[in-house]
Image 1 (cartoon, rainbow, N blue to C red):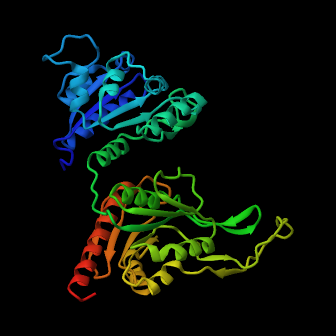
Image 2: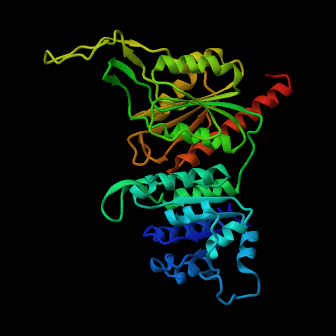
Image 3: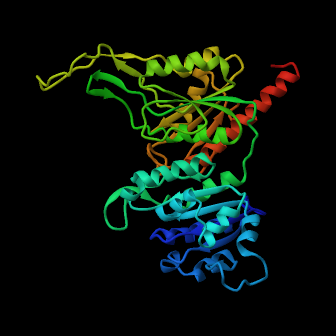
Length: 410
């Protein structure tokens, strides 16, 4: 699908071991139809040859401010004007420091300084370097003036240690770039509330009952809705994800707290996406002090938590209500029952036993089932892509409701 046809992307490659991954970034951008130009720093050429990028981009690779151009122009100015988006990957501590200090001493920094296009910076470096206070100050400084950053992944580094600093996967980088290049503002004027993550129900001050939800799906829905112009409120259980920028945010811990936050804000919103994995039960009498181990068995008495989704279905009054259904068997049957019992407009169902669709992954495999019985069966995709497909359906339902209202049937 040539969704980036007619778009120009300039990719700046810096000197880091992750430079080899950027080869796939360029390849993916080309497959989506983008016109890609590559600028390589001197150190980047020690990891990957310009010929590799030239073969994939089908454009000359710029490596030197003063090399003889293939055609006459002022190269850094022409690329700066041509670009719809700049991507810097891997972005080293050095390039981030230069940009933050206004230094333009090579082709890459000079071109970025001259461009009016949005700039996406994808850091990759040793985790100690990434956490360095000066590097973080430089990142904050660039964010404050409009540069967009992607968070590095956490994992094993090239030298064998483990930490936060790995380049995100090429597919994730391209997905972010595509979102920046094709902003669809079809949800402007719509107010959407999203819940995400697990809840925790205390047993005592050091133990709790919870589930495996990471919050990634709900956070992706909130981010996608914001990108499409919606006014978004994210109500989140305890997760390890970074709080999203420019989105209303309420932090909760227990199911009761989530219930209260949702009910208080519900009247102000047009649609609710209940992606949170809310605990069905809580401990009837949580201990005030740590329970000491005395016997071989400990019995906990549980009581039901409020059913947030069911209560919303009872009082929704024309609002759009989207539920989630994570199952290990009888997926479609259970999802359809939930639509009926909770008065939903649509439900997102996924089998958490399938590879790539379980808790904590960056991907998902979902079915979107609507109240009229129609079903969209989607393949493995990133959670952000899945979020956009969910919002496509919500946008469609909103259009149908508006049409019914105009025609006097709503």
